[in-house]
Every structure is written in structure tokens, then in C-alpha cells.
Length: 369
Image (cartoon, rainbow, N blue to C red; front, side, top):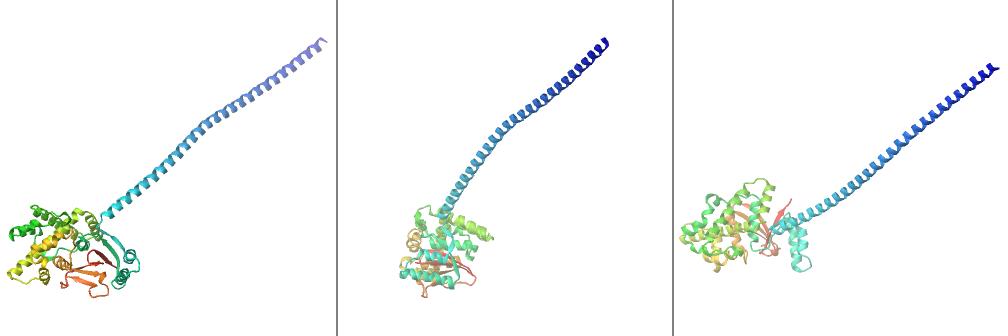
């Protein structure tokens, strides 16, 4: 009995021991699962916290980039508007300063300038249509309406076409013409020479005339040596947008006209050699019977209160050795609609063209075939 009791006790002990082992294993598994769940939870929470921080940083970065993009766009728009306004301002200033405007359509100009159904307006439109149809003149360059108009139009074309010095200028130094007139020929009265609207006279006239001659010679030599048409046009645009420079050119041309008149007058007095008939026409006028009266009554007022008249246009073409063809629109349907200055010229002379509506202000016609 005792042995059976001992075997049961041993069996029960082993059974309890086995249960304890199972309980211990189960407890260990439970603890392991709890530790794994805690690690996963901690990792997930860490990732969530990290994502929240990253998300905040991303949102701040996106907000900053959006604000930066908006600011740059506004800045670009502002700078573009500022550049456009500045460009328009410079363009207006350049056009305002230009004494010879860019080309415009001939018939469009005619329609704008001569509206209405008056007799004069109809005649002008018909004259412009005739130029367009028969003379192949398609465009027009307007020339500033002042008392240098015709001299400006002639000189601009000479420069823009690259026409060289006339033959007599190549043989003489034009810088010495004031000195020669004053000292060699005893024309002390040139101190009364007037510089257009400046009305400058006095003992400094000689020095001022020399500067004008220097400006003409320097600019003419530079432009005639420029072979590229576009580059020549750019130089002309710059030159003819500076009043102080271009006025010197016109005064130099006026003085050359005076010099030629003095030369012709001396030849007529000495009867050494014949002179061109245009000088006979010039001296036949009561207002220009000699060089002094020509200067006082005509040249001094050119650029100030009067323009060149037809006799002076003959003289201008003669001394510059160019044939000046003028379309006189107010003489449409008459023999004087198209006139050449001078009417007698050499075949090798270059030709330039002008058009006028009133024989006072002149514009530059442009031909297209």
C-alpha cells in the first residue's frame, strides 16, 4: 500500500511539474508576444512622430516655395512692365529727337494728312496716287518741318546713300575756306554771318564757321567710307537726332554756298572765265545783287525765318554735284510737277529725290519696284 501511495505521489508530483512547465512556457510565450507587440507599437509611434515632423517641414517648405514662386512672378511682371515703359519712353524720345522719321506707307500718309473732300485735299491725294502708280514711290520719310527742311533732306540722302565729296571738295581743303574768304579775299563782312536760329554774329564768327566746316568734313568722310548700308543708316539716325551736330552741318553748307557766290562774283567782275547761268539769275535779284546782300537778305535767315528758294536750290545742287529731283505736289497736272535742280547737270552726278506740298517743307520719297 505504501508503495502504491508513493507511486501516486510521484505521479502527481510529475503531473504538477509538467503543468508548471506548461504554465511557465505559456507565460513565457505570452511575455514574448507582449514584448513583440510593444516593440511594434513603439516603432509605429516613432514612425508616426517622425512623419508628423517631416510633414510639418514639407508643408513649411511647400508654403515657402509657393510664396517664393508668387513673389518671383510678381517681380518678373513688375520688371517686365518697367522695362516696357522704359523702352517706350526711350523710343518716344528717340522719335521726338529724330529730324528724319522712319519710313511710312505713302498712300497711308496721304490718307491721314489729306482727309476731307476739299479741292486741295482731292488734288493732293491724286498727286500721291500718281507718285505711287507711275513713279513707283511706295514709302515716305517725313522730315522735320523747320527752316532747315530742304538742306536736311538733301544732306540726309547724300549721307545715307554714301555719296562721296564733290570733285571740287577733293581738290581743296574746305577747312581753309573761312580763312581764305576773310584774309585772301578781304571779306571782313563775314563777321556779320548769322547761324540760323542762333543769330550769332560778331568777331567769333570765323572760329565758329571753322568748327562747322570741321564737323561737315569729318562726318561726311566717315559716312562715305562706310560701305554697309545698315551701318550707314545707323550713323545717320544718330547724327540726325542731335540738333547741335546737325545744325553745324547745315551752317557749313550755307557757308559753302556763300563761298561759291563770292568766287562767281569775282569771276564776273574780272571777266576771266564764264560762270554758270544760275549765278546770273542770283545776282539779277535786287535782294542778292552781290555776295554781301545775298548773305544779309537770304543766307542769314535760312534756318531761322526762311527756307531755300528755287534759285538757292539750283545753287545747292550745283555745289554738291547732285541732281535734285523734286516732285511738287501742289503743281500736280502742270509742267512744274517734276523739276530738277539744277536743270543742267553732268551725267556722272548722283540723283536724290524730294517731294514737297508747298515749296517750303520737304520730305524724302522712297522707291520700290
